[in-house]
Every structure is written in structure tokens, then in C-alpha cells.
Amino acid sequence: MYTKGLKCRECGREYPKEPLYVCEYCFGPLEVNYDYSKIKKKLSKELIASREKNLWRYRELLPIDGEPIAGLQSGFTPLVKANNLAKELGVKELYIKDDSVCHPTLSFKDRVVSVAISKSKEFGFDTVACASTGNLANSVASQAAQAKMNCFVFIPADLELGKVVASLIYAPKVVAVEGNYDEVNRLCTEIANKYKWAFVNINIRPYYAEGSKTYIYEIVEQLGWRAPDNIVVPVAGGSLISKIWKGLKELKMLGFIDEPNDTKVATLELEHLRPSTKIYAAQAKGCSPVVTAIKENNEIIKPVKPKTIAKSLAIGNPADGYYAFKTVIESGGWAEDVTDEEIVEGIKLLARTEGIFTETAGGVTVAVTKKLIQQGRIKKDELTVISITGNGLKTQEAVSSKLDKIIKIKPNLNSFENEIKNIS
Ligand SMILES: *Cc1c(COP(=O)(O)O)cnc(C)c1O
Ligand SMILES: [Zn+2]
Image (cartoon, rainbow, N blue to C red; front, side):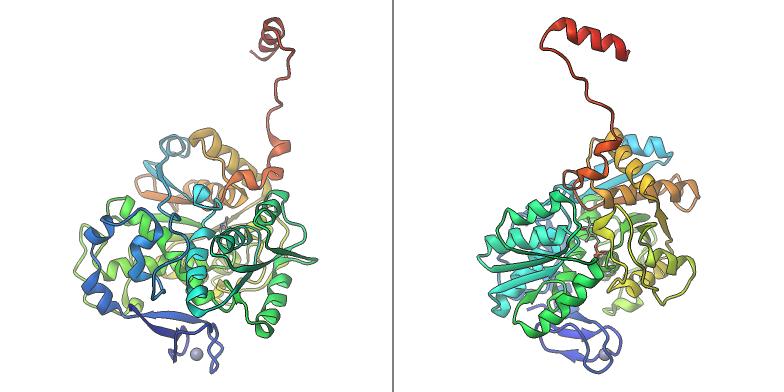
């Protein structure tokens, strides 16, 4: 076993391995506490490379004790060298980490849910649930079906049709709450206190969040055990971005990151480690509490009322907003937000240059990357990774009215050639 239990992120108090998530002394969030000296003895790059291409290849760095029962095909998504987009944006080395094709529900949430469902089964729960902006509900519903667990998913009532259908198809109980995500989440916290269910992003959150680390482990491994200079990350609740930073620290501690001037790392304390990667937070202007905090250099995140087409990122009161803020500041990165129009342009730009159709969250990261390059914050000769975390087929209403008209013809050659003449 490679985990010791849970630990408060604020006061350091330790807790047993249970479905707990908040410190009863200081109300700080709990985090998984690993036995890093044991992991360091066991894990090597070679061992990882010898394993199957899914997120469990890093299993010692994930918080389950037995065999994983979910996500056996999840993760290890493509790291695409985006030469066309790089040329368009005027940089040398640009990569897309493409979780729009993550198995089984086409978003990065399959990573966190694989860990959460496996852990919930270990804890003996028979019902899993979540508060979701869409993608999480899809993944929980799918993986609960496969794990033969009862399932409740709670979503805001105004979600995109694609995301509603992509939950309903697995026949969970889908509860549409007349309110925004923050209201859904508040309600779910009350339900979690009363019912003995595994809410993957509430009482299972410390375990769930660890799954995000595999996103950056894969990037580093796919770059030949090299950390990128920059990574642009979408922020909703702030979990992914803070776990990317934690994952980089772990890889550095294990000595897995090859850097030209790197010295051997002796410490097992993550707090003392400073990976060289700069982390950039990306949000929509209609919901940018973390970006605003970073720009104002104010660690107190002011909640907002979301109004944006990027519904997967529409969390006005992010649970890990403070840690997202800290991640960006510690890494020496920055933050930007973009308008709904720029989001649509970002989606279309990625599709036109790289043939990848991402959802609104991907439009946010592409548009923010463009902005950061124009500002000179991301330099032309650096290696940059853009996080693409969800699939465009789920949010078609965001772009459907903003595309070229289809060419409608009669089924004969004449009709075709007449129309073609009109175009060219
Ligand atoms: C959930 C989600 C995110 C960000 O998640 P965090 O809550 O910040 O960890 C990013 N992109 C997509 C598509 C998502 O569904
Ligand atoms: Zn505490």
C-alpha cells in the first residue's frame, strides 16, 4: 500500500483512509497522504513504460489499495504535435493534450471518475453520485453502469442537450436542478451528509482529484520524460490545475523529469519542490473568479454569477479556487479570460488547423493561449502544451449557427457544377 491516509492541506492533521473530505479542526480540505519513500523504491520509468497504456500505469501514485475496477481503458490520450496551429500562432513547439477522445465518455473527467469509482467500491458503497456541469455526470453515469452501481447525477437544468443525452443513455437517475452549478453543489453537499452515497466530487473528492495527475504524467512521459515550459489549463473548480502542479512535483521528486541543469532531488516534501513548468489558468470572461484573483494578486476568490457558453467551466464559487490561484503564482505563470466570441473562434481555429473538434472549454484554452502568445508571456521558442479536455460533439449549439452554410444540390452533376461555380 502506497498511501498512509488523508492529511489536511492547511493544518497537516492526519486522518484515516475514509470517505472524508474536510478537516474537523480547521475546515481545510483533506488530501491523500502518500508514502513517497516506498513509491521511490518501487516505481521507475522503465516499470511504467512496461505497463498497459491507460492511466493505471502510474498506479502507485493513485490512491487505491486493491486492483482498479474502473477506467481500465481510460487515459493515455494522444499528445498531438500541433505544427499547423504553431505556425498560425507564431511559436516553435506547440502540443495538444487531447482528452476529447478519452475513453469512455470523451472528456478528462474519465480520469478522476476511474479513481473515484474504484475507491467507492473499495469503501463498500453501492451508490455513486455527483454534482456536475455535464462531463462529470456523463462519466459517472457511464462508469457506474459498467461497475454495476446505482447512480444519481445532479446537473443545472440549462445544460446542453448533448451532455444531457450523454448521461441519460446509461440510465442513471438524472436530476436537473433549477439553478446554477453552485446551487447544485450546495444541494448535493446537503444530500451527501444525509444519504450514504459516494459523491465523487464531494465526500470522495480527495481520492477523485488524484486522477487528474495522470494528465500531466502522460504529457511528461509522451515528451520523453521532459516537462513542458508552459501548460495552459482550463479552470472550473480548480482541481485539474492544482493537481497538474502536484503531479509535476511528484515527477521531479521521483527524478523522472530530465532537465539540462537539474540537480538530484533529495527531499520527499512536495512543498519544497519547484518544477520549471509555468502554469496558466484559462477561464471564460463570463465566469473568471480565479483569473480575476490572479490579475489582482488577491488570494481571496470572489464568487461570481456565471454567464458564458463555456458551461463546463461555469463554476462561480470554485472549491479549489485558492489552490488554483496558488499554483499559478508559485509556478510563475499567469491567467487570462476570453469572451464567448473568442471561445467560438478558438474552437474553429483548432478545428481548421489541427482537425480536432473540441467543446467550449477547449475553445477557452486555445483562445487564451493565443492571447498569452500575443502578450509575449508565452515565448516563441518555448515548448507549450494546450489542454483540450472535452469533445465538441457534446456542445454543438455553441458553434452550429456560426459555421459556413452547407451546399445543397439536386442529385445530378449539373446541379453540383452550378453550385460549385457560385462558390469559386
Ligand atoms: C471539469 C472540466 C474542467 C475543469 O475541471 P476542474 O473542476 O477545474 O478540475 C475542464 N474542462 C472540462 C471539459 C471539464 O469538464
Ligand atoms: Zn486542518
